[in-house]
Length: 225
Image (cartoon, rainbow, N blue to C red; front, side):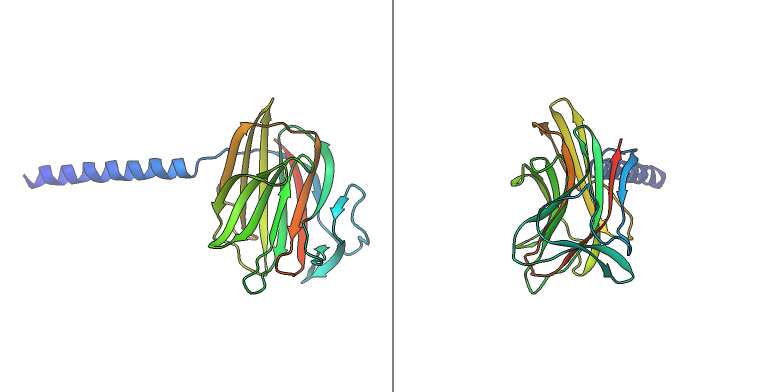
């Protein structure tokens, strides 16, 4: 009798573990992307101005020292949405990534991100909200198409960001993630699938200094799957 009970217990345990594994796989489901770098930019001391392929939409960007390294500095005043296009003009599938340093002041939290396909493409933002920090995919500058809580942002630190665009005709899939620089990259945290028009355009990075503090960018990269 005891042997039968033990067998039933083991079967229930195995089923529970199996269900938990399935739920975990579903939650973390996302594409594994193998991509080749076609553009990389790391700012250095001997760069007096930003590269020729940069097209500043608004804002004052200068190369300056932050800690032991150099980065592209965004002046935080006056308050506005500042951005810069960079790299080759692309239309098909790509991966864009960058590192961003930002800090809050009191309850005011900055917003920052990276993008694809010029001004009217997709952007991945990390931004403050009433109940914490969010990670969002935005289409055509203002349309939020996906949003999730992002609990890992810490003020006065570097955040690594990655945005993957998969395009098949008018069908697009977009995946985004962010993580503290130096920590494991992890799974995709936010995603969108649908049919949207996309024009050829450069990738981009963005900063909205709500906190009135400097924002820095470095390690820009574009990859082709």
